Image (cartoon, rainbow, N blue to C red; front, side, top):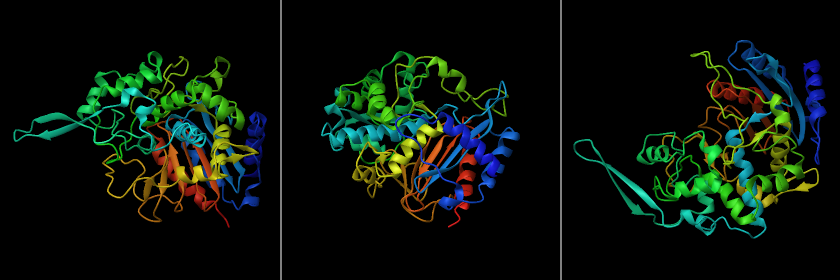
Length: 419
Protein backbone atom coordinates (compact mmCIF):
# COMPACT_ATOMS: atom_id res chain seq x y z
CA UNK A 1 0.00 0.00 0.00
CA UNK A 2 2.72 2.46 0.95
CA UNK A 3 4.62 1.66 -2.26
CA UNK A 4 1.51 2.30 -4.41
CA UNK A 5 0.80 5.57 -2.63
CA UNK A 6 4.39 6.82 -2.89
CA UNK A 7 4.61 6.07 -6.61
CA UNK A 8 1.33 7.83 -7.24
CA UNK A 9 2.38 10.93 -5.35
CA UNK A 10 5.66 11.17 -7.26
CA UNK A 11 3.69 11.15 -10.51
CA UNK A 12 1.16 13.66 -9.17
CA UNK A 13 3.53 16.25 -7.80
CA UNK A 14 5.67 16.09 -10.92
CA UNK A 15 2.79 17.55 -12.93
CA UNK A 16 1.18 19.73 -10.27
CA UNK A 17 2.35 23.26 -10.91
CA UNK A 18 0.95 26.74 -11.33
CA UNK A 19 -0.17 29.51 -9.02
CA UNK A 20 -1.56 27.10 -6.39
CA UNK A 21 0.01 23.83 -5.22
CA UNK A 22 -2.08 21.06 -3.73
CA UNK A 23 -1.33 20.51 -0.03
CA UNK A 24 -0.51 16.88 0.82
CA UNK A 25 -0.54 14.54 3.80
CA UNK A 26 0.01 10.90 4.64
CA UNK A 27 -3.29 9.01 4.96
CA UNK A 28 -2.85 8.37 8.67
CA UNK A 29 -2.31 12.09 9.28
CA UNK A 30 -5.85 12.85 8.12
CA UNK A 31 -7.65 9.84 9.55
CA UNK A 32 -7.69 7.60 6.48
CA UNK A 33 -6.86 3.89 6.45
CA UNK A 34 -7.77 0.72 4.51
CA UNK A 35 -7.13 2.52 1.22
CA UNK A 36 -5.80 -0.75 -0.18
CA UNK A 37 -9.45 -1.76 -0.62
CA UNK A 38 -9.91 1.03 -3.17
CA UNK A 39 -6.77 -0.04 -5.00
CA UNK A 40 -7.85 -3.69 -5.04
CA UNK A 41 -11.31 -2.85 -6.36
CA UNK A 42 -10.26 -0.51 -9.16
CA UNK A 43 -7.34 -2.70 -10.18
CA UNK A 44 -9.69 -5.69 -10.42
CA UNK A 45 -12.18 -3.66 -12.48
CA UNK A 46 -9.43 -2.80 -14.96
CA UNK A 47 -7.99 -6.31 -15.09
CA UNK A 48 -11.47 -7.71 -15.78
CA UNK A 49 -11.85 -5.05 -18.50
CA UNK A 50 -15.00 -3.69 -16.91
CA UNK A 51 -13.19 -0.34 -16.77
CA UNK A 52 -10.36 0.74 -19.08
CA UNK A 53 -8.63 2.72 -16.37
CA UNK A 54 -9.26 5.26 -13.66
CA UNK A 55 -7.65 8.00 -11.63
CA UNK A 56 -8.50 8.50 -7.96
CA UNK A 57 -7.67 11.41 -5.69
CA UNK A 58 -8.89 11.82 -2.11
CA UNK A 59 -8.37 14.82 0.15
CA UNK A 60 -9.27 15.16 3.80
CA UNK A 61 -8.81 18.09 6.15
CA UNK A 62 -7.81 20.15 3.12
CA UNK A 63 -4.88 17.92 2.09
CA UNK A 64 -4.53 15.27 -0.61
CA UNK A 65 -3.72 11.95 1.05
CA UNK A 66 -4.35 9.44 -1.75
CA UNK A 67 -3.69 9.70 -5.48
CA UNK A 68 -3.46 6.63 -7.71
CA UNK A 69 -3.92 5.73 -11.40
CA UNK A 70 -5.16 2.29 -12.47
CA UNK A 71 -5.48 0.39 -15.75
CA UNK A 72 -4.90 1.84 -19.19
CA UNK A 73 -5.31 5.30 -20.65
CA UNK A 74 -5.99 3.88 -24.13
CA UNK A 75 -7.46 0.37 -24.48
CA UNK A 76 -6.43 0.27 -28.14
CA UNK A 77 -2.72 0.65 -27.38
CA UNK A 78 -2.52 -0.54 -23.78
CA UNK A 79 -0.83 2.70 -22.71
CA UNK A 80 -0.92 2.80 -18.89
CA UNK A 81 -3.12 5.35 -17.15
CA UNK A 82 -1.12 8.19 -15.57
CA UNK A 83 -1.98 10.75 -12.92
CA UNK A 84 -1.67 13.54 -15.50
CA UNK A 85 -4.17 11.92 -17.89
CA UNK A 86 -6.74 14.36 -19.25
CA UNK A 87 -10.45 13.45 -19.09
CA UNK A 88 -13.66 14.66 -20.68
CA UNK A 89 -15.36 16.02 -17.58
CA UNK A 90 -18.79 16.37 -19.19
CA UNK A 91 -21.26 17.53 -16.52
CA UNK A 92 -18.56 18.18 -13.93
CA UNK A 93 -18.25 21.36 -16.01
CA UNK A 94 -21.50 22.54 -14.42
CA UNK A 95 -20.17 23.46 -10.94
CA UNK A 96 -17.40 25.49 -12.60
CA UNK A 97 -20.04 27.44 -14.50
CA UNK A 98 -21.96 27.99 -11.27
CA UNK A 99 -18.84 29.52 -9.71
CA UNK A 100 -18.46 31.81 -12.74
CA UNK A 101 -22.05 33.00 -12.24
CA UNK A 102 -21.50 33.55 -8.51
CA UNK A 103 -18.35 35.58 -9.22
CA UNK A 104 -20.38 37.87 -11.47
CA UNK A 105 -23.11 38.07 -8.82
CA UNK A 106 -20.55 39.20 -6.24
CA UNK A 107 -19.35 41.88 -8.67
CA UNK A 108 -22.88 43.24 -9.06
CA UNK A 109 -23.09 42.28 -12.75
CA UNK A 110 -26.09 40.01 -12.28
CA UNK A 111 -28.58 38.80 -9.70
CA UNK A 112 -29.83 35.24 -9.43
CA UNK A 113 -33.38 36.62 -9.51
CA UNK A 114 -32.71 38.36 -12.84
CA UNK A 115 -34.65 37.09 -15.84
CA UNK A 116 -32.31 35.33 -18.24
CA UNK A 117 -33.68 37.58 -20.98
CA UNK A 118 -31.84 40.52 -19.38
CA UNK A 119 -28.75 39.01 -21.01
CA UNK A 120 -30.26 36.77 -23.70
CA UNK A 121 -33.14 38.29 -25.65
CA UNK A 122 -33.93 34.93 -27.27
CA UNK A 123 -35.35 33.78 -23.92
CA UNK A 124 -38.02 36.49 -23.70
CA UNK A 125 -41.75 35.83 -24.26
CA UNK A 126 -41.39 32.05 -24.24
CA UNK A 127 -44.25 29.59 -24.66
CA UNK A 128 -44.94 26.40 -22.72
CA UNK A 129 -46.17 23.26 -24.42
CA UNK A 130 -49.39 21.67 -23.22
CA UNK A 131 -49.89 18.01 -24.11
CA UNK A 132 -53.07 15.98 -23.64
CA UNK A 133 -54.17 12.56 -24.87
CA UNK A 134 -57.64 12.28 -26.41
CA UNK A 135 -60.04 9.36 -26.05
CA UNK A 136 -58.45 7.65 -29.07
CA UNK A 137 -55.02 7.83 -27.46
CA UNK A 138 -53.76 10.55 -29.78
CA UNK A 139 -51.55 13.36 -28.49
CA UNK A 140 -53.05 16.83 -28.70
CA UNK A 141 -50.78 19.81 -28.22
CA UNK A 142 -51.04 23.53 -27.75
CA UNK A 143 -48.79 26.25 -26.41
CA UNK A 144 -49.58 28.75 -23.69
CA UNK A 145 -47.58 31.79 -22.54
CA UNK A 146 -45.04 31.25 -19.78
CA UNK A 147 -46.48 32.54 -16.51
CA UNK A 148 -43.16 34.17 -15.66
CA UNK A 149 -39.72 34.49 -17.16
CA UNK A 150 -36.87 32.04 -16.65
CA UNK A 151 -34.46 33.36 -14.02
CA UNK A 152 -30.75 32.78 -13.52
CA UNK A 153 -31.70 30.75 -10.44
CA UNK A 154 -33.97 28.55 -12.57
CA UNK A 155 -31.05 27.83 -14.88
CA UNK A 156 -28.76 26.98 -11.97
CA UNK A 157 -31.22 24.55 -10.35
CA UNK A 158 -32.75 23.03 -13.54
CA UNK A 159 -36.24 24.45 -13.02
CA UNK A 160 -36.29 26.55 -16.20
CA UNK A 161 -38.57 24.28 -18.23
CA UNK A 162 -35.78 23.35 -20.63
CA UNK A 163 -34.76 19.82 -21.60
CA UNK A 164 -31.69 17.98 -22.87
CA UNK A 165 -33.72 16.31 -25.59
CA UNK A 166 -32.28 12.87 -24.86
CA UNK A 167 -33.90 11.67 -21.61
CA UNK A 168 -37.40 11.29 -22.99
CA UNK A 169 -39.57 11.42 -26.08
CA UNK A 170 -41.75 14.43 -25.39
CA UNK A 171 -42.66 16.73 -28.24
CA UNK A 172 -40.09 19.20 -26.89
CA UNK A 173 -37.43 16.49 -27.00
CA UNK A 174 -38.42 15.64 -30.56
CA UNK A 175 -38.34 19.30 -31.55
CA UNK A 176 -34.85 19.66 -30.10
CA UNK A 177 -33.69 16.76 -32.23
CA UNK A 178 -35.29 18.21 -35.35
CA UNK A 179 -33.64 21.59 -34.67
CA UNK A 180 -30.19 19.99 -34.54
CA UNK A 181 -29.66 20.53 -30.81
CA UNK A 182 -28.76 16.86 -30.32
CA UNK A 183 -26.41 16.67 -33.30
CA UNK A 184 -22.83 15.96 -32.12
CA UNK A 185 -21.51 18.20 -34.90
CA UNK A 186 -23.50 21.10 -33.45
CA UNK A 187 -20.50 21.73 -31.18
CA UNK A 188 -18.35 22.38 -34.24
CA UNK A 189 -20.77 24.69 -36.07
CA UNK A 190 -22.66 26.72 -33.46
CA UNK A 191 -21.55 29.20 -30.84
CA UNK A 192 -23.10 29.15 -27.38
CA UNK A 193 -25.17 32.20 -28.33
CA UNK A 194 -26.47 30.38 -31.43
CA UNK A 195 -27.53 27.43 -29.28
CA UNK A 196 -29.53 29.79 -27.05
CA UNK A 197 -31.19 31.34 -30.11
CA UNK A 198 -32.30 27.90 -31.30
CA UNK A 199 -33.56 26.94 -27.83
CA UNK A 200 -35.55 30.17 -27.69
CA UNK A 201 -37.53 29.11 -30.77
CA UNK A 202 -38.89 26.04 -28.99
CA UNK A 203 -41.57 25.81 -26.29
CA UNK A 204 -40.69 25.00 -22.70
CA UNK A 205 -41.50 21.59 -21.26
CA UNK A 206 -43.25 23.09 -18.21
CA UNK A 207 -43.88 26.41 -16.48
CA UNK A 208 -40.64 27.86 -15.03
CA UNK A 209 -40.09 27.02 -11.38
CA UNK A 210 -42.58 24.16 -11.19
CA UNK A 211 -40.46 21.07 -11.96
CA UNK A 212 -36.88 19.81 -11.95
CA UNK A 213 -35.67 18.62 -15.35
CA UNK A 214 -32.05 18.00 -16.29
CA UNK A 215 -31.37 20.18 -19.29
CA UNK A 216 -29.15 22.47 -21.30
CA UNK A 217 -29.75 25.17 -18.69
CA UNK A 218 -26.08 25.26 -17.66
CA UNK A 219 -25.05 25.60 -21.30
CA UNK A 220 -27.30 28.67 -21.40
CA UNK A 221 -25.48 30.01 -18.33
CA UNK A 222 -22.18 30.16 -20.20
CA UNK A 223 -23.87 32.49 -22.68
CA UNK A 224 -25.00 34.56 -19.67
CA UNK A 225 -21.38 34.68 -18.44
CA UNK A 226 -20.30 35.98 -21.84
CA UNK A 227 -23.01 38.64 -21.94
CA UNK A 228 -22.51 39.81 -18.34
CA UNK A 229 -18.70 39.85 -18.43
CA UNK A 230 -18.04 41.00 -21.99
CA UNK A 231 -15.57 38.13 -22.44
CA UNK A 232 -15.71 34.92 -24.42
CA UNK A 233 -16.59 32.07 -22.12
CA UNK A 234 -13.25 30.29 -22.46
CA UNK A 235 -11.38 33.54 -21.79
CA UNK A 236 -13.43 34.23 -18.65
CA UNK A 237 -12.88 30.74 -17.26
CA UNK A 238 -9.16 30.82 -18.05
CA UNK A 239 -8.49 34.31 -16.69
CA UNK A 240 -10.78 34.23 -13.65
CA UNK A 241 -10.76 30.56 -12.54
CA UNK A 242 -8.15 28.30 -14.14
CA UNK A 243 -5.12 30.59 -14.12
CA UNK A 244 -5.59 31.87 -10.54
CA UNK A 245 -5.98 28.31 -9.23
CA UNK A 246 -3.14 26.92 -11.31
CA UNK A 247 -5.43 24.60 -13.29
CA UNK A 248 -2.87 24.31 -16.07
CA UNK A 249 -4.46 21.37 -17.90
CA UNK A 250 -8.10 22.50 -17.89
CA UNK A 251 -9.68 23.89 -21.06
CA UNK A 252 -12.58 23.56 -23.49
CA UNK A 253 -10.31 22.72 -26.42
CA UNK A 254 -7.28 20.46 -26.12
CA UNK A 255 -3.90 21.81 -27.30
CA UNK A 256 -2.38 19.39 -29.86
CA UNK A 257 0.71 18.84 -27.71
CA UNK A 258 -1.48 17.37 -24.94
CA UNK A 259 -3.43 14.96 -27.16
CA UNK A 260 -1.31 11.95 -26.16
CA UNK A 261 -2.37 12.44 -22.52
CA UNK A 262 -6.08 12.11 -23.31
CA UNK A 263 -7.87 9.20 -21.64
CA UNK A 264 -9.72 7.21 -24.27
CA UNK A 265 -13.06 5.48 -24.20
CA UNK A 266 -13.77 2.11 -22.66
CA UNK A 267 -14.93 -0.81 -24.80
CA UNK A 268 -18.62 -1.65 -25.10
CA UNK A 269 -18.78 -5.30 -23.99
CA UNK A 270 -21.75 -6.02 -26.25
CA UNK A 271 -20.14 -4.73 -29.45
CA UNK A 272 -16.42 -4.93 -28.77
CA UNK A 273 -16.08 -1.35 -29.99
CA UNK A 274 -15.10 1.84 -28.20
CA UNK A 275 -17.99 3.64 -26.54
CA UNK A 276 -18.61 6.91 -28.41
CA UNK A 277 -17.34 10.01 -26.63
CA UNK A 278 -16.73 13.60 -27.74
CA UNK A 279 -13.97 13.84 -30.35
CA UNK A 280 -11.50 16.22 -28.70
CA UNK A 281 -9.28 16.41 -31.78
CA UNK A 282 -11.79 18.82 -33.34
CA UNK A 283 -12.06 22.46 -32.27
CA UNK A 284 -15.43 23.19 -30.70
CA UNK A 285 -17.11 26.57 -31.20
CA UNK A 286 -19.90 25.66 -28.80
CA UNK A 287 -18.00 25.56 -25.53
CA UNK A 288 -20.79 24.09 -23.43
CA UNK A 289 -21.03 25.45 -19.89
CA UNK A 290 -22.66 22.18 -18.88
CA UNK A 291 -20.44 19.69 -20.65
CA UNK A 292 -17.36 21.04 -22.40
CA UNK A 293 -14.39 21.00 -20.03
CA UNK A 294 -11.34 18.75 -20.21
CA UNK A 295 -9.31 18.40 -17.03
CA UNK A 296 -7.12 16.28 -14.77
CA UNK A 297 -7.58 14.96 -11.26
CA UNK A 298 -5.09 17.43 -9.79
CA UNK A 299 -6.65 20.40 -11.56
CA UNK A 300 -10.19 19.54 -10.55
CA UNK A 301 -9.06 18.85 -7.00
CA UNK A 302 -7.84 22.44 -6.81
CA UNK A 303 -11.31 23.60 -7.82
CA UNK A 304 -13.03 21.23 -5.37
CA UNK A 305 -10.75 22.16 -2.47
CA UNK A 306 -11.43 25.82 -3.20
CA UNK A 307 -15.13 25.10 -2.62
CA UNK A 308 -14.43 22.93 0.43
CA UNK A 309 -12.33 25.77 1.89
CA UNK A 310 -15.16 28.28 1.54
CA UNK A 311 -14.16 29.77 -1.83
CA UNK A 312 -10.39 30.12 -1.29
CA UNK A 313 -7.31 27.98 -1.90
CA UNK A 314 -3.67 28.83 -1.32
CA UNK A 315 -4.40 32.52 -0.78
CA UNK A 316 -6.51 32.77 -3.95
CA UNK A 317 -10.17 33.59 -3.30
CA UNK A 318 -12.68 33.13 -6.12
CA UNK A 319 -15.96 33.52 -4.23
CA UNK A 320 -17.05 34.25 -0.68
CA UNK A 321 -17.91 31.71 1.97
CA UNK A 322 -21.51 32.93 1.71
CA UNK A 323 -21.60 32.14 -2.00
CA UNK A 324 -20.30 28.61 -1.39
CA UNK A 325 -23.04 28.17 1.22
CA UNK A 326 -25.59 29.42 -1.32
CA UNK A 327 -24.30 27.05 -3.98
CA UNK A 328 -24.38 24.01 -1.70
CA UNK A 329 -27.83 24.62 -0.18
CA UNK A 330 -30.98 22.90 -1.39
CA UNK A 331 -32.86 25.27 -3.72
CA UNK A 332 -35.86 23.09 -4.60
CA UNK A 333 -38.94 24.49 -2.85
CA UNK A 334 -41.66 22.17 -1.52
CA UNK A 335 -44.01 21.14 -4.29
CA UNK A 336 -41.49 21.26 -7.13
CA UNK A 337 -41.96 18.10 -9.15
CA UNK A 338 -38.91 15.87 -9.52
CA UNK A 339 -40.10 13.74 -12.43
CA UNK A 340 -38.85 10.29 -13.48
CA UNK A 341 -35.35 11.48 -14.39
CA UNK A 342 -34.41 13.06 -11.06
CA UNK A 343 -30.70 12.30 -11.22
CA UNK A 344 -29.79 13.33 -7.63
CA UNK A 345 -31.90 10.43 -6.38
CA UNK A 346 -33.67 9.79 -3.05
CA UNK A 347 -32.33 11.65 -0.04
CA UNK A 348 -31.00 14.53 -2.14
CA UNK A 349 -32.21 18.00 -2.99
CA UNK A 350 -30.56 20.21 -5.56
CA UNK A 351 -28.43 23.31 -5.15
CA UNK A 352 -26.73 25.46 -7.78
CA UNK A 353 -25.70 22.73 -10.27
CA UNK A 354 -24.99 20.18 -7.51
CA UNK A 355 -26.99 17.49 -5.71
CA UNK A 356 -27.26 18.23 -1.98
CA UNK A 357 -27.78 15.54 0.66
CA UNK A 358 -30.83 16.41 2.77
CA UNK A 359 -31.54 13.08 4.51
CA UNK A 360 -29.32 10.58 6.28
CA UNK A 361 -31.50 7.81 4.89
CA UNK A 362 -33.41 7.19 1.64
CA UNK A 363 -30.28 7.08 -0.52
CA UNK A 364 -28.59 3.74 -1.25
CA UNK A 365 -25.11 5.27 -0.94
CA UNK A 366 -23.34 6.59 2.17
CA UNK A 367 -22.91 10.30 2.83
CA UNK A 368 -23.52 13.04 5.38
CA UNK A 369 -26.33 15.56 5.43
CA UNK A 370 -24.94 18.64 3.67
CA UNK A 371 -22.67 16.68 1.32
CA UNK A 372 -22.86 17.92 -2.27
CA UNK A 373 -21.75 16.34 -5.51
CA UNK A 374 -22.07 15.93 -9.23
CA UNK A 375 -20.70 13.71 -11.97
CA UNK A 376 -20.19 13.48 -15.70
CA UNK A 377 -21.57 11.28 -18.47
CA UNK A 378 -18.46 9.14 -18.95
CA UNK A 379 -17.92 8.35 -15.26
CA UNK A 380 -16.27 11.40 -13.70
CA UNK A 381 -17.45 11.99 -10.13
CA UNK A 382 -16.66 14.22 -7.18
CA UNK A 383 -18.22 15.14 -3.90
CA UNK A 384 -17.56 17.42 -0.95
CA UNK A 385 -18.58 16.25 2.52
CA UNK A 386 -18.17 19.19 4.94
CA UNK A 387 -18.98 17.07 8.01
CA UNK A 388 -16.25 14.54 7.23
CA UNK A 389 -13.96 17.21 5.70
CA UNK A 390 -13.71 14.89 2.70
CA UNK A 391 -13.19 15.55 -1.04
CA UNK A 392 -12.92 12.46 -3.28
CA UNK A 393 -12.56 12.48 -7.09
CA UNK A 394 -12.94 9.49 -9.44
CA UNK A 395 -12.24 9.89 -13.16
CA UNK A 396 -13.33 7.24 -15.68
CA UNK A 397 -14.15 7.30 -19.42
CA UNK A 398 -16.63 4.42 -19.72
CA UNK A 399 -20.31 5.48 -19.63
CA UNK A 400 -21.78 1.98 -19.62
CA UNK A 401 -19.78 0.67 -16.68
CA UNK A 402 -19.17 3.74 -14.54
CA UNK A 403 -22.38 3.87 -12.45
CA UNK A 404 -21.74 0.67 -10.51
CA UNK A 405 -18.06 1.55 -10.09
CA UNK A 406 -18.95 4.99 -8.77
CA UNK A 407 -21.38 3.64 -6.18
CA UNK A 408 -18.85 1.04 -5.03
CA UNK A 409 -16.18 3.75 -4.81
CA UNK A 410 -18.38 5.77 -2.45
CA UNK A 411 -18.69 2.89 -0.04
CA UNK A 412 -14.96 2.21 -0.18
CA UNK A 413 -14.10 5.85 0.52
CA UNK A 414 -16.35 6.12 3.56
CA UNK A 415 -15.02 2.77 4.72
CA UNK A 416 -11.52 4.29 4.73
CA UNK A 417 -12.38 6.90 7.37
CA UNK A 418 -10.64 5.73 10.52
CA UNK A 419 -11.33 8.46 13.09
